[in-house]
Length: 146
Image (tube, one colour):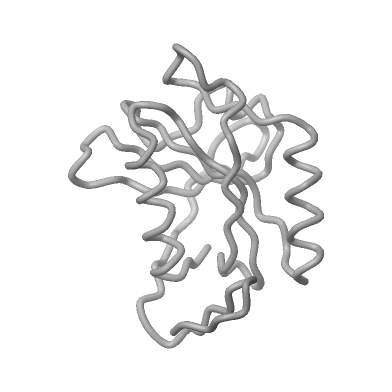
């Protein structure tokens, strides 16, 4: 099971809304399966195509360095599906990432955030719990919120 702070959940949902109709995304990290850090990244396929989120090796290296610097584990890539369902596409699976964090805006009034682990090229959905209380978040910039 993955957990995510309400604050980070809300930021990811807002990022998706702000970039509609384009796909957007970034990287997630944390500790003990709790997502407590996000690193948005620029979509390298930002053009006429709205249904592709592309990153490159430099993005992945930067993310690993970022999370390592802050003593956090790298969990994986998150991205949106503006019109599709929250399920890994064949292109998603072909990236070789262990975990896929996907937010669907198919029903724009109710985004659907799901997590999958890829086992033998097959997605297995994992539970995701939003932590509303009792979790302190330390911003990398230095402020603390509960």
